[in-house]
Image (cartoon, rainbow, N blue to C red; front, side, top):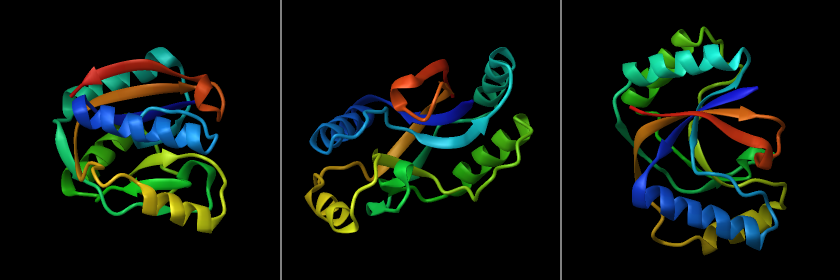
Length: 166
């Protein structure tokens, strides 16, 4: 199975990666790279998916996304996250992605940057949110696309199949 990510770069990537790493150590969760999933659960031959990823990268331009206040859910991969505003460029990128990959998403497009994976009590998630650093990025410039090969649901088994600049 594969996932298609949009990835921030530079200082914003470094800041988010640091927060994710800190939270994963502090709360014994898995480490993972900062990203916004553009399309998940892709099936197919890797070479074909890499070709389509190249096609998508040529079709998209870098764009900014505004992040909202941290949120949480009772889902492992949406334990603690920063919701992203589904701006027109972001929605258009998602539309082009579903067209190029001939995909029918299984759920509504709900872009976000996860900060922590796991299952934790609601009160602990609220405490974590209240203790998050004040300097979290408010906007992201998304200029990189990654195709991720997910060997399992464990982030340690995720490998980058392709990385392309928009």
